[in-house]
Structures are given as structure tokens and as C-alpha cells.
Image (tube, protein in one colour):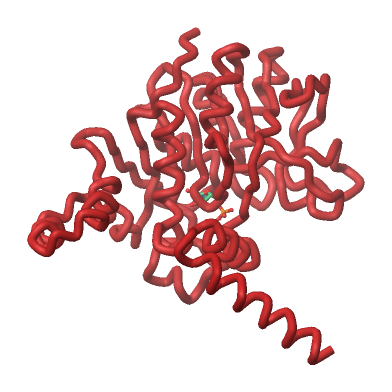
Amino acid sequence: MKRRVTKAVFPVAGLGTRFLPATKSIPKEIMTLVDRPLIQYAIDEARAAGIKEFIFVTSRGKGALEDYFDHAPELETSLRKKGKKDLLATLKNTNMDSGAIAYIRQHKALGLGHAVWCARRLIGNEPFAVILPDDVIAAEKPCLQQMVEAYSETGGCMVAAMEVPPEKASAYGVLDVKEDMGSMVSVRGMVEKPSIDEAPSNLAVIGRYILTPQVLKNLNQIKQGAGGEIQLTDAIAQEIEADREVYGYRFRGQRFDCGSKAGYLQATVAFGLAREELRDELASYLDEMKAVRKAAQ
Ligand code: UTP
């Protein structure tokens, strides 16, 4: 089985209800951390991992996403005329090569598994990555790159995993660990959104995957699972049942759940503080806020 991963699927067809009313007209993935949309972070991570083909699973009302990756010749000409080289470079970094991006529609939000299944013809018979753009990961070496490197040794299926407090596990797919090898675990089973008593560990799956094409075949048979959705986790768990290897990869980095308001705000602060031109002003504002809160208590 080929172990080079050159295709990535970006499922962006969800309804984003937690961000209503904004998501009534703005795709969640276009929301910005400082000045870059969530989707740009995902694309940059994929590029760093060697991805060449970018497959977006979209839905109604996501036109702004498609426009975002188009070239903007008028804007570029105007910036060039004004000599704004830095902005021009920033803008050019968002351009994608012709033919590198494909869009496919998910007609109904039937779940993440269904969204990935919608891309099956574009993926074909090779391993592929899945990136959920609302999971943003700050890391020295981008998370997917870490995974692709590990995957070149292991093959099989690989999911990004992180430790979560037991009371939070029910919000995730959770791994039943067969063998713990440090940065990697082999997996005996996976449970989507288990209750506290049912969670087999505190190792939760987050939005980065490297999957074999067999998972797409499994998705052909998968019925609705937890929450009435077609779950990707169930299709990966079938690989384990068929005695094929599934690994959890403990990535190095900090993950922000930008699909939730609190996570999104935390990421905004963290990415703001990471920017030299904003750091001092933002940090002193946060100190001020802390002092105000303390005084109010
Ligand atoms: P979420 O569980 O965050 O759902 O999906 P959501 O619809 O985006 O947001 P809420 O919960 O209503 O606020 C995780 C990822 O899977 C994609 C989403 O776009 C997101 O990137 N997804 C989910 C699909 O593409 N299709 C689906 O049917 C469901």
C-alpha cells in the first residue's frame, strides 16, 4: 500500500449552529483568528505536510469559501501600484494553483462520515488526510506533518489524539488503547461520544486523520450512529474489527476547538499574543481586564 499522502479532504459542510446568527450567512471556516480565516490555517498545515490536492466538501451558502481561494487580480494590481509588497505577498500566499482545489457538495448535513464519503471518487484508491478546519493546532511542526512522518513508518489508519479530562470525554470520539508506545498508541476500539462510565480512556480523537481507502468502502455500509449522524469514527472502528491497524497519534502542539465559542475566543487571544505587532497592546489589555475582575470580586 502506497504511504505517500498527497490528498486531503476538508469537510466544511456543517451548519455551524453554535455560531448563529453569524453562520446564517458566513461560513464558520471563514471566521478569522486575528486576520486569517480558519480555513487558511488548515490549508497551510496541509501544504506543510506535502498535500497537493485539496478537496472541499461544501454545502449551500458556502460560496464565500470558494471565492476566498480565487485569485484577486484587481486587488493585486492596486497593491502593486501602491508598492504594498508585504500585503501583496500575504494575498498571494492565499492563491491556490489551478486544479489543486476541488469542491464537492454534501446535499444534507448527515454527519462527518457522510461528508468524507461524498469525496470518495476524488480520493480514489489511495490513503488520504482529513482536516477539520475548526480544530486549529498551534505547533512548532504542523500537526499533519508530524502525522504524515509517523504514518510513513506505520501505514494503517491514524487519528490525532489528545488527553482530555474524563468529564469532557463525552464530547469526543474516545480511543480504547491496546498498546501505548508513547507518541503513538495502537487502538483496540473507538467509541463516539461515550458517557462518562463508558469512556474506555481519556484519549480523545481530534480533527486530523490519515485514512486508507478501505474506510470509504466501510462508509458505504455505515448506518446513522451517535446523534443520528453517519460517524467517521464508526467506519474507522470497522478497520479494527477487520484486524487492520489503527493508531492514535499524540501530536505535539496546542489544539483550539474553534467550533465552540470559548475555544474560538481562546485561540484569538493565543494567536494575537503570538504576533509581535499585537503582543504588547493585547497583553496589557488582558492585565487590565484581570485587575478589573479582581477588583469586582
Ligand atoms: P461539527 O460537529 O463541528 O458540526 O462538525 P458543525 O455543523 O460544523 O457545527 P455545529 O455543531 O452545528 O455548531 C465538525 C466538522 O465536520 C463538518 C463540519 O463542517 C466541521 O468541519 N461536517 C459536519 C460536515 O462537513 N458535514 C456534516 O454533515 C457534519
